[in-house]
Amino acid sequence: MLTKTVKNNQSSMFLTLVDMLNPNHPLFILSNTINWKIFEDSFSVFYCKDNGRPSKPIRLMVGLLILKHLRNVSDETIVEQWSENIYYQYFCGKNEFVPIVPCEASELVHFRKRIGEAGVELILKESIRVNGKDGEEENASIDSTVQEKNITYPTDNKLHRKIINRCKKISQKENLQVRQSYTYVLKKLSVDQRFRNHPKNKCKALRADKKVKTIAGRFVREIERNLNQNEYYKTDIELFKQILNQKKTDKNKIYSIHKPEVECISKGKEHKKYEFGNKVSIVYTQSTGVIIGAKGFRNPYDGHTIESALEQVERIRPSKKLKTLIGDRGYRGKTQINGVEIKIPKPFNKSKMCKYQQIKSRKQFKRRAAIEPIIGHLKTDYRLGRNFYKGIFGDNINIMLATAAFNFKKMMNKWKSSFCLFFEKFIYYFCNQFFCAKNFKWGF
Image (cartoon, rainbow, N blue to C red; front, side, top):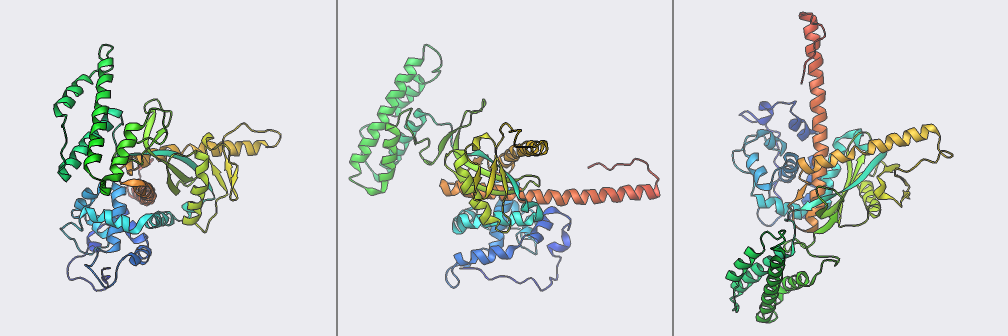
């Protein structure tokens, strides 16, 4: 049931957070800039009005999602920090300090599922609106990267041993009889698999790998026979069979049992040749630096992602149409989509382009490279580097929440720098007037 909105018109007899906090703090300013009513009107339809336990306030849940990616912490950590930080509480709509946790960490999981991708996209839309005219630029850059899933580097031996452990758990849960547990055998085989790069141990390690795969196949067949056509474990059994039958050169391979949607994406980097996750397309304004589009894909060619990315940009920002989209050579083959000109670096045709046009295009291509460090900040500071959410749905919402946090942080830094600049000028004027200080510079 949707909780009743609390009216804060009546003044408190004690000190409120407004009286205690610094009004120039970026979180304080941001909390008064975001239009929270948009979220309350849009998300209230997902709640029952007259049945069930009262829910947590919508502003509280949306604020926790924003703060989580803004501070790069987990669900559990942001809930604990909220009870200690008065700026967090004011940001989420509280007037007095509350020394207890606002909700359970699992409630954030249910709230993300409740609002869905459309609700998270609304948060991204509001982050663009907060940036004002900076988010209304007509020229943008586009680039793609990989969002890694929370899995270890996959090997056949890891997957086969996980299959064996899963089958043992199923047999214990369903009280099934198995002929042999292979505990001692697997321990001996793990010893044989060590130091496989040494020439004397290579053949022994390969034989041990083959034996582990054989044991995994025996477990799967035995569990399938003993389940007596139990449909509950049918998808698990099919997944185990697919892993055991897949070969090195197969397509659509399974790299993780608990996250089978993971794709292997080759990036060609020397330090990391393969990344396991999904592809991300980022659309970034050319000069102002606001992310106006963020969408997840599986593993398509970069040029095939432009149309879906532009549709999202038009949906988020309907008032301003893009004119130019600048990408790298990975987007070859596309020159115009839905009236948007696609530019990629290539040799200039001097007979068709004047010197001014050449210089202008060269500057645009150089400016496009600014999106690379932005992607690095998204990965290190806003939880895009490793995705802990489950499924394809988790891939998509993690991208949009990370980019929304980046936009909010950009606006907070702009307010902070403008305040510091004003304070620096004030101190400079004060020192010149009273102390006649020459060439005084206040450093921050």
